Image (cartoon, rainbow, N blue to C red; front, side, top):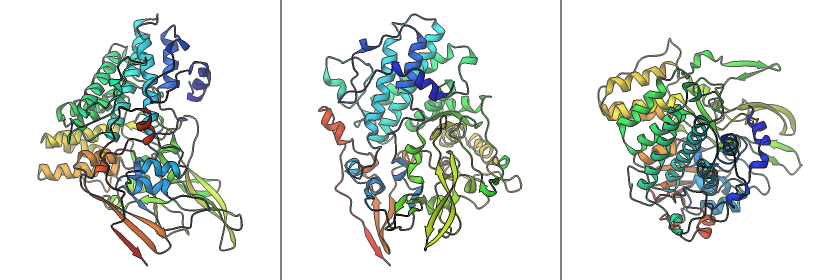
Length: 534
C-alpha cells in the first residue's frame, strides 16, 4: 500500500490533536475504533513520522563536528542567517532565534509529543477493540515501538547523556491519552526513569512481535518490525553502556536473513541521463536498499539546508547559490582516499562553481541532479546541482543494517572481545572498498580498537543524525565552528568540553504552556572566541 494513499484513505479518522501543553488530547470520545484495523490506520496517521510530516530535527546536523560553513556568499534580501547560526553556534536562545528568522521547523519538543499522543491513544484503545489476538498484537507492537523510539530521541535531545548523569532531569513521561487528575506527570522525570520506560516499551513491542508468525515480524514496508525494535534496543543499551545486551540485540539484526550489506562496488560511479553524466549515490533512506530496516522522516526536515539557496538579485534574476554548509575537514580526513564512501556519501561541488568544495549532498537520501539556468557575470549558463527530491515513499532517514555491525563492534570492543569486534568491522568495510584496495584491519590494543570503531562509526553514519548523540556519550568534546559573516570576515565559536549546550534548551513555547517544566541550565549568550578579516 502506498503511504500517501493510506493517509488519504484514513483522513476522516485523524481527530487527535495536541492541546496547549503538547501532552493533552481532545476527548477520546470523538472517535471510537471498533477493531484493530481502525487502530492500525490511526497509528499511521497520528503516530508515524511519515514522509510528509515535518518539524523534526531540522537543525540536528548543524550542532556536531561533521560540518563546517562553506565560503561566503551574498544572501538574498530578507534572508536571516540566524535560521542557521542559532544552532550552528550553539546559542542558548536558539529556538527563539530560529523562530525570529522564520525557520519553519523548530519545535521538535512539541512534534515528538504529538506523535507520542497518537501512540498513547492507540495503546489506550487496545483493551476496548474486538479483534483477533494476532491483529491486536500487530498494533500493540507498533505503538510501543514508536513510543519507545520517540522517547529515546527526546531524552537525548533535552536530557543529559545516560552514562554521564542518569539522575539528572530528562523529559516528562506521558503514557496515557486521557487527561490525568494529578499534574505531576507534566514534570520532568530523571534520565534514568525515562530510559526505564523506553526499555519497557521496547520489550513490550518485542514480546508482541514474537507472538506473531515469523512472516508478520518484518515486511518491506513503512511499518515498524521486530528487527526495528531490536536495533533500537541495541542502540538504547549502547547509550546505557550495557555492552552485553547491546551486542546481543545487534547480533539478532546481523543474523537476520532479510537484510544484507550493500556492496558499493555494485554501484557504477556515473550514469548518463539526458545526455549528461551524473554521479550515482546510495539511498539508504529508501526501502529499496538491502540495508534498510525502517525508513522514516521528511527529507526536507533532515536535509533542507543541504540544497543551494535561491536568491533574487537587483536585476530580479533567479540565481542558484551554493549550500551554506559542507562536509568538515575533520570528517574528510578520517577517510582514506580509496574508501568508496568518500565518493558515494559525500560529493564534490559542480565544476566551475568553487574549487574542491565538498557538499553534503550525498546518496543516503534521494538527491536529484537538477539543471539550473542562471545568470553569472552577465552570461546565461546551465549548471548541475544536487537537491533533495521530495516524492511519496522517499524518506529522510532510516534505521539500517550497518548500525547493527557498528553497535556490535563497539560493544565487543568495550568488552575486550577483540576478535569479534574486528570481524564485524572487516565484514562491513569489505563492502566499502574495491577488492583490490581492501585490507583487513588488525589492532594491537583495546584502546586502538575502540578509537577505530568510533572513527568508523563517524564515517559510515555521517549526516544520519547519530554523530551528536555519539559525541555526547563519548565525553562531550570541545568543537569549534567558523561562520563567514561577510566577504573576508569570519567569526569562530567554541562549544567547550562538557558544555551546557550539549543538552539543548527546552523551547520557550513549551515552558510557557507547562508550568511544571524546569529549564535546562543555560550558558550566557555565546560570543565568538575569535574573528578573522582577510
